[in-house]
Image 1 (cartoon, helix red, strand yellow):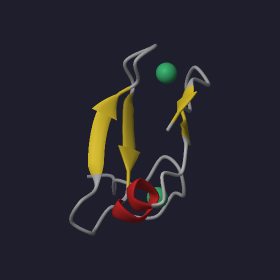
Image 2: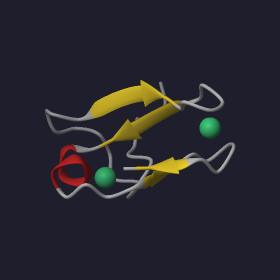
Image 3: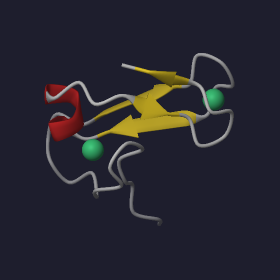
Image 4: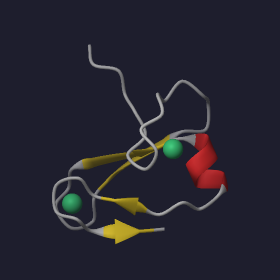
Length: 53
Ligand SMILES: [Zn+2]
Ligand SMILES: [Zn+2]
């Protein structure tokens, strides 16, 4: 089992409050840790490059 990691900062998703959702453009799974959510750090899709808050 691969360890899930945050798409934005690459930190392991161990903390509660992490979120996962599909990229609106290509559907790949985007994961964000609690910290990145709190700080509204933008993500960039590793596949298609789509970014968002
Ligand atoms: Zn993060
Ligand atoms: Zn994408």
